[in-house]
Image (cartoon, rainbow, N blue to C red; front, side, top):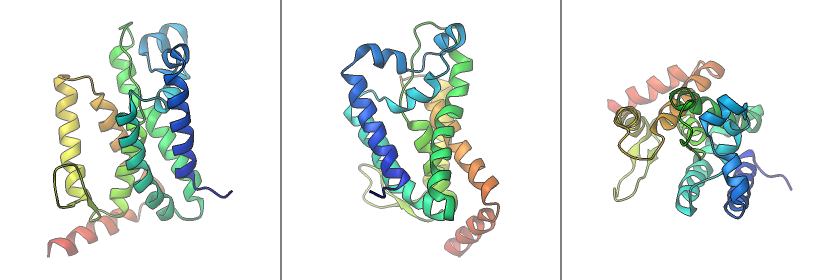
Length: 204
């Protein structure tokens, strides 16, 4: 069966989340606990935390976004699209968690989980290739151009990360998104010209 990289990531993540929900010992070992990473050298948590989710809603929204944007990114990366998508996604999970690790490495009870950093990296890579592609969000009946929503998303994540007023790891969203932009530009430098030109044509 010739499945895309996006589909394989979906299958593995859904299976891992369901498995962890039914095994609390595994669930606890897979969370990103910066204190355990630092003091017990449990570095695997940087990866495993991206494959477990808080609940069905958390899992659904992450996998829903990945499904729609992952295939576009793999296509635009060309011949090695599937391989590069996997690298982008996994690296996004790890790199987006590094600021969280540095902030909470001496806080024993802090935990974080979810694929949001990897999903944000894929989403923002897609925006670099297709900045005008409309993105639909709940309760708003019209699509918002990706580059507009992406800019608002970065501002919101930065602000909320500073406020720390909820239990969402906004830093992971922010740094995952930035990593997705940098990764795409490094591998496809010409995307900058295309990105700017598309926005110029749209604004005229």
